[in-house]
Image (cartoon, rainbow, N blue to C red):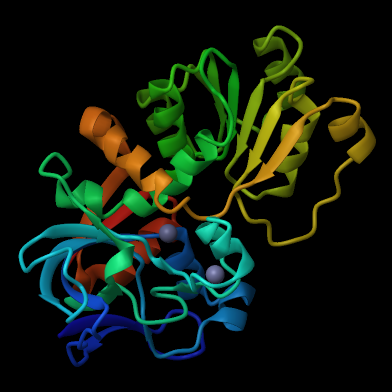
Length: 343
Ligand SMILES: [Zn+2]
Ligand SMILES: [Zn+2]
């Protein structure tokens, strides 16, 4: 089968090659992949940054965002049959650690991520534990099935606190920040302000539900945001960028009693004024990782049933497997947001 691998421990070196079709064990299904989303995580592996160097053991088949069709089922995998259309949760969890036994599968101690720790979905076929499968209703096309993973990151972040009738600031309009903008709008948020320096991403944010997009590189961003929200700042901040300046902005402007959800990963340590920005403000800070299994998937399924068309502007490109490196180059040049591979 055709497969896209990270071949060696160096920048780039992403190759379309031939691999054997994997064989499912008793508890797995074999999926014929139709479409796969390229994620920021894949871009890190492409760049071979510090995180990738510590985590990835090439050669590995990349990719963790998928839509496909069941091709074969293991002996114990009886819930699905050949031909069923599916997506899948890419975090394979242990079911035994303390987090798993408390229903917090998304923070499993022993998680294995497809396309990172084990072979992923940038291939014609892949095996998945049956328990990771999310079946796709006819109202979810393959294109949307292939982005349920990052849509789920956004959903998890938005749903971590009430947003209805509250003022929201979203820092960072990559694909997850943009999905969060659309979801917060559908959930009845009051005013939604997005901070994003890139013009293409800003214009998409406006299209899919932001009342206003501000450029954080311009002067007086903090006072501008405070003025927008009646002098007391946003009730909810969804931090999607991981940039030090954005995190500092978020803590400085959030309203007293507000809710802060942090999803963006930082590449360096960030210092917070705990007294003034957390304790005296009485805010709640939450870290967001992955998707709740499978509450978030159900929420995404419901969202796509009603609003799939709303997130269309985020999926800027669909390309063939042989164009994978062009996909990364477009991401590097900020010319693409969500790129979907046709497998
Ligand atoms: Zn991803
Ligand atoms: Zn576990």
